[in-house]
Image (tube, rainbow, N blue to C red):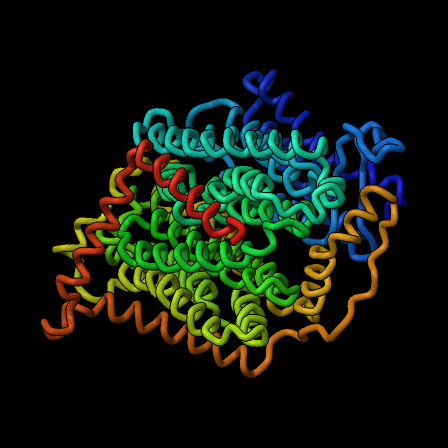
Length: 614
C-alpha cells in the first residue's frame, strides 16, 4: 500500500496520465495500428482504475490531500496553490468513471469503421476531466476540469459527423453548456472579488457567517453550470438530444457518471464553501422543488418516448430528480442511499444503453415500434443473452432486490421517513414505477412482441429509425458486446450483495458532509477522520425488500397497461384533458437551442428566487 507521500502524489497522476496519453494519440495516433491504439487506451483506463482503487482503500482510513507543486497557503492563510482532495465519495466517483470507461472501451473495440484515433483521445480527455473534477479542491480548478469534460463530451456527441442530427445534438449540447459555463465563471469571479479566495477550504472560513444577497447570487451563478450538467429541470433540454445521437459507449458515460458529477459539484461547493452562509436557509427548498419538478416531468416524458435512447435519457433525468428530492433531507443516511443508488443506476442504465446499441447495430434502428418483436429474431445464445440482460437491467432499474439501485432507493426512502418526509417513499415508488415501466414496456414489445404493433397517436413521438448504425454486426453479435452489457448487470447486482456496503456508504457520506474535517485536512494536514457517531444501516431489511417488490410490481403493471391498452374500454383511455398537456410538453422540447437558453435563464431566476433571503 502506498505511503502517505506516495498517496498524495497519486491524485495528480490519475489526471496527468490520461491527458499525456491522449496528447500522444492526437500527435501520432494516426500512424499507429488500430489494435495498438485500442489496447493502449484500454491500458491507460485500467491504470487509472487501479490507481483509483488504491486511493479508495486509503481513503477508508484517512483523506488524501495533494498541493500541486507544494504551493500551500502562506502564513496569511491565502495562496494560489491548487489542491486535490480525495475522500471516499469523491474518489469513488473517479473510480466509477474509470470502470465505466473500461467497459465502454471493451464494448467499442474495433467499433468505428473510419480509421483514426480521435475517438480514443477524446475518451481519455473525457476521463481526465471527470477524474479531475471529482478531486478538485477549488472552484476554479473545478471549472477547468468541468470545461475539459464538456469539450470532450461535445466532440464525442458529434463524432458521427456524416449525420446532421449528431452535429445538431452536439451543437445544442455545446451551446447550452457553454452559456451555463459563462454564468459559472461569472459566479467564480464574484466569489473571488468578494473573498480573494478560490480554495473551498479557505472559502469555508472566509464566507462563514456571511448572509449577504451577493453571496446567494454568486452561488446561484456558480452552480448553474453544474445544474446544467446534472440535467435538472429546466436546465435539462440538451440531454436527450445528446443521448439520441452520441455513440452508445459514450451514452454509458453520460448517464452513468457525467450527469451525477454535476450534482456532486453542487453538493461539494455548497457543503464546504457555502454551508455557513445565507444559502443554507434555502438550499433544501431548491433541491426539493427542482428535484420534484425534474422527476415528474422526466417520468412523463420517459413514458412518451419511442426512441429507445431518448427514453433511457429521460429515465436518467427522472432519477436525478429522485436524487435531489432525497438529498433535500440533508442527512448522511439519505446521501448514503443516493450514493448506492448512483452506483446501481450507473450499472443497469449502462447495460440498457449497451443493449440499445446492440439492437441499433443489428437491426439499424432504436425505434420501439420498428423493433416490435425483433428480439425474437436474435438467434441462439445471442438472443437469450440480449433478452435476459435487457430484462434484468430493466428490473434492476425499477428497484428489484438485490440490485444496488434498489438498495440505495430503499435506504433513501428510510432516511426520508425518519426525517419526517413520509410522502418520500410513495413519491419514489411512483417515479421508479413509471420509468421502470417504460423500459419494461420496451422489453415486452421488442423482446417478446407483446400486444399488437403500435400505431396511431404514439406516432407523434420522435422516431429512432433515423439513427445511423455504429458498426454492422451482421447476424452474429460480437461476444465483447454481450459480455460488456452482462458485466454491468452482474456488477449492479453484486454491489447490492456486498456485506455492510450500506454501513460503509453511510460512514463515507458522513465524512463527505464533514466540512470541518475537510478544512483541517486541506489547510492543516490533519487528514484523519473523526469517529462516526450514531447507528449505521445494515443493508436490506424486510421493509425495504417489500417496498422494492411493490415498486417492481407497479412498474410491471405500467408496462402491461401500456402494451395492452388497445384492449381497454374507450372510457379508460387517456381523455383529451390529459392529451393537451402531453402535446404541450412535446412542443416545449422543441429542439431549438434558443428556447433551451431561455429556459436556462428562467431556471437561474427561479433558483435565485427560492434561495433569496426572506
